[in-house]
Length: 460
Image 1: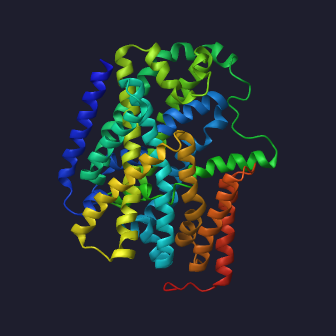
Image 2 (image 1 turned 90 degrees about the vertical axis):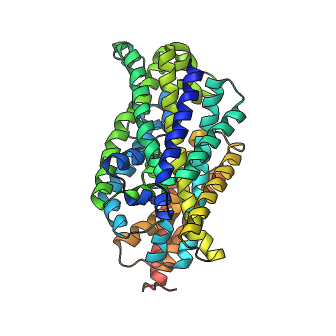
Image 3 (image 1 turned 120 degrees about the horizontal axis):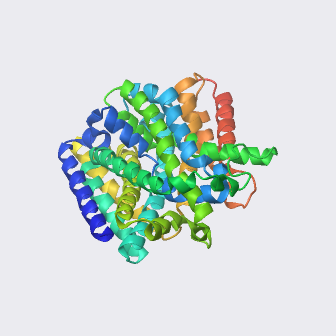
């Protein structure tokens, strides 16, 4: 029953996605859904930006092992990002009337900065997409009893199919459908376990520091804690996926309000898998033994829930991951077509841009698929992806919107210094948090660059 239900659900997903593709007539329709998304679709697609493999699979495992301090990055950091988006960024970005974040760096700085920023943006997404693809492979392996590599290929093919044809229209339409399945699936499981979860035994058997929110008092603990907030909370703000969703709204008020509403929904829905993880920690601790704790929720549902609940949960899990993956694939594809292709081959006309965007979707999907064979750890892949854009592009974004003394030299030094420090700390085995010090280095680069070039020159 579960296998048949999942197959039917996947076919429905493909059908809805292809149906939405009928609205695509030009590049604006493909990349920004014609800028026609109302409050409902705009909120749904913003919520689905990160609510995928990391939140349900990765964050729940982190919660069970480390408590609150393990889920600062997601869902708490993701909710912070949506709140900051609505409060400080949605309206000013919408007013610029741009297609990609690469266009922002061209307008606020120059073409050289646009090229560098676009390359950093594009690279930053491959890890995120690979994380979602890896998760799809795990899920299809568990529920369809096929080798994980075949599950990965199946999931990738389905997402690429409707994203290739429908672009942002398919992404937004399916986000609304898939979000409903996510909420239903997680809520049903919580209802089953709630009576036991509310018993005093639950609190009595949890570690004393399970609900600890602030870190220990030493400086290193605090910088690690702040780094966890920064990875998605600040690192995703200059992301093309979130920018694309803002610009797809029908007006700036919708963009702002849907960001706030999606923040609230993210916190509420994001709490569901964490509560389930807490239940497993107390009442089914054997699922936490061994190395593969990422499959904890899947194995628990498959062995302790009725068949119809298994079907709903697997549908919810597949929905969350496909929503996140399709939107993430769209992001670098837009940057490649809009910002990188013209540098080497000249500016295309609108229909050519539409074709290039679709081909970029295929290329991004294939490269991300290949990355899953190098690293299939969902949480690690996603964290690296968000950090790259954060340490390189957040400071130039902030200065470009709110500071008069932003300069080309400052932006380029900010990007370069942030990336150098981040990668050095990441791969040198340092105990110091790479995201925190990468962001500090990026800010120092901007300050030094602005001092070297005190006057802002648009054409440098």
